[in-house]
Image 1: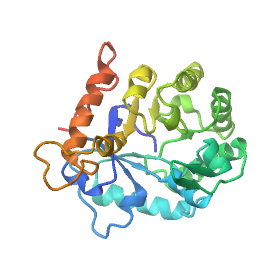
Image 2 (image 1 turned 90 degrees about the horizontal axis):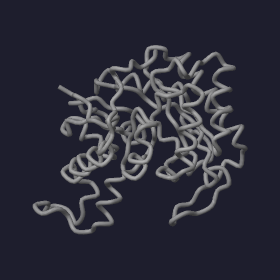
Image 3 (image 1 turned 90 degrees about the vertical axis):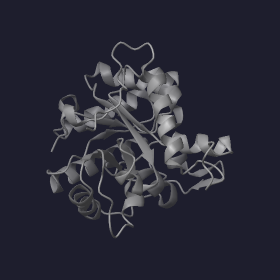
Length: 279
C-alpha cells in the first residue's frame, strides 16, 4: 500500500517518549524499539511515523534480530490501537562506515556488520519487498541506502530491477545521511536522486542546518536533535522545575520545532517545511 501525497507530513518531531503521541498534538516520529514494550498503547492525537530502529540494531548486533513477521505484526498493532499511522520505515541496512567496519564513536561501540555497501543495499531492497509482500495493507516506504551519490543511484537501479519504480512512490526515505546532513555531500546525494526522478524524499535525522541546506530537495524530514540541544544547554527552561535539563521535555521540544520550521522555511517560496494541519 502506497502512502498518498496528501497524507505525508513535511516535518516529524522525533521523540523517545511514546506517551507524547496522546498529548503533543503535532506529527511525531517514534521508534519501534520504544513502542514495542508498551502493553497499553497511547491513542494518537496527531499523525505519526514509525522508525524501525535499524541503526541501533546494526550498531549493537551487526544484524537484524527482529524478523519481518514480528515487525509487521507490531506495525499492524500500532495502526489499529494508536491510530493515525502515516508510514513506517522498513528494516533497512545503513551504510555508514562505522556501521559496516565497527569501532567506537563518542563512547558508543559499534560491532560492525563487516559486509559491503552493495550487500547492505541488496538486503535493504530484499527486506522492503518482503515487508510489502507480507503487508500490502501497511504504509511501509522504500528507503535508498549508499555511501556515495553513485551508490544511491545504484540502489535506485536495484529497486527498478525488482519491479519497484521509486519515481512512482509517494515517499522514499534517504538513509545514511544523518551524520552528514547539512553538507555538500548530502546535497549531492539528494540532487542525484532528483535527477533520477526520485523527488518525494524523506530525510532521516536532519537537524536545522541540514533542513535549511536541503529544504528544496526534501518533501519531509524528521529530527530528534532537540534532545541533544537541550542536554547541551544544561539548565532547563524557566518554569521547568521537575528536571535538571529539558532532554525529555515536551515544552522544549515544541519550542525547538517552532524554531526549526521558521528557520527551514525562511526565504523559501515553496515552504516545504510548513507544519502539517492536524485538525
